Amino acid sequence: MRDLAPFCPDGLHVSNLRIARDGKVLLDVPDLALEGPGPTMILGPNGAGKSLLLRCLHGLIQPDAGCIQINGRKLSPEDRTQQAMVFQRPVLLRRSVSANLDFVLKRMGLGRVARRDRIAELLVEGGLQGQARQAARSLSGGEAQRLAILRALACGPGTLFLDEPTSALDPAATQKIETMVLRASARGVRIVMVTHDIGQARRLASDIVVMQGGHVVEHGQAQHVLDAPQSPETRRYLAGGLVT
Image (cartoon, rainbow, N blue to C red; front, top):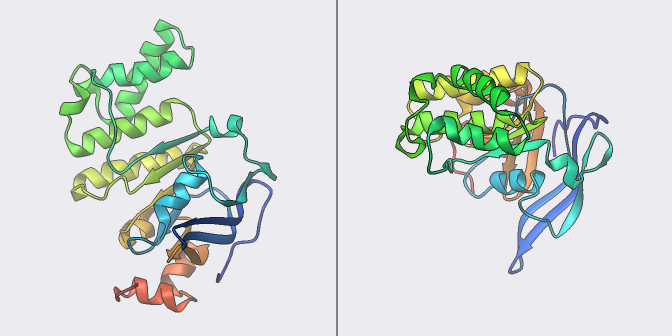
């Protein structure tokens, strides 16, 4: 691993993380520290292990070995309740846009008036106030993804994982989501996001993780990684070369 950011007690720290299936190693990360304000962007070719790493960090997949720490202690089930994740293809409830948000807020124990006020705030933040009563599953791709992000943010997470949230969207829809991501980051939400878009990484990233073959081949400040990559794998990927 090149240009690895030093471990800081305030952040996510992965050590000796490993997943193998049928004798093939899918993920092998001896050491990775994600600290600082973020956002952290994870880059790499298809099959590099980016989404797998994200799912491990969120507890959706249990690794065969290894440890994930937050703020210097082992990540607990209680810590994971302070995380949220949005997938490439959002999963929305069969109800209105507002009702999707209300479902989350009600589970958090908010009263009716508090939920109503919070829903109004969220809809404005996502630019969806005009679709409040619309069936969520009838939204366009960009609108659906914005709703999914709003629903995740409604929980007040400390960390938000995003798995290629703009991969199938046009530039205008992508820009709206990037704005939401930057606003959340400015409020102190730690963003860890997978993307294939190098331009997006330039626009959003504070630090960048580059993966290949289940390994982290480089991690460092965004400008350093993008403008002066240290590993041959990163140089080849950023140059658009074939990466296997």
